[in-house]
Figure (cartoon, rainbow, N blue to C red):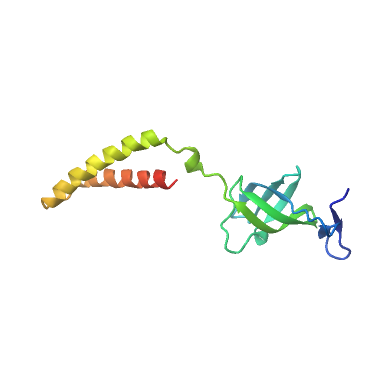
Amino acid sequence: MRLCRRVPGSLGVLVPTSTNEVHVPTGKVKWFDTERGFGFIAGDDGGEVFLHASALPADAAAPKPGARVEFGVADGRRGPQALAVKLLDPAPSVVKAKRRSADEMAVIVEDLIKELDGIGNGLRRGRYPDKNKSTMVAKVLRVVADEIEG
């Protein structure tokens, strides 16, 4: 049973064969090169579909590999080409995949609190921490914030 048919004179646009059933292709972004403005989608049906930047939503950032998408398909000169791509969910976060356990973070946060408490005591006495200590604490704060935010 064919799910789609070609519309004559429409540059290969595929439409559903049945008005009762609409099949919208889905898949995952294999890769996308922002400099060149294109990439490929691995369709859930096993096919590979060309993805041009013009098919992406105007307000969307470049899709990351693994991002789930929904798209229309047209026959391009070199094969299937995605149209009107909709990002279904963001790509898996590398940060979340490498995230420390809650137990590890608890120890780090407790150590950071001790450092900040010492800095607070010095500030009450009118002394800022030296450059090395303030740089180190600022870096740790950024890392902890990123870990917590995920």
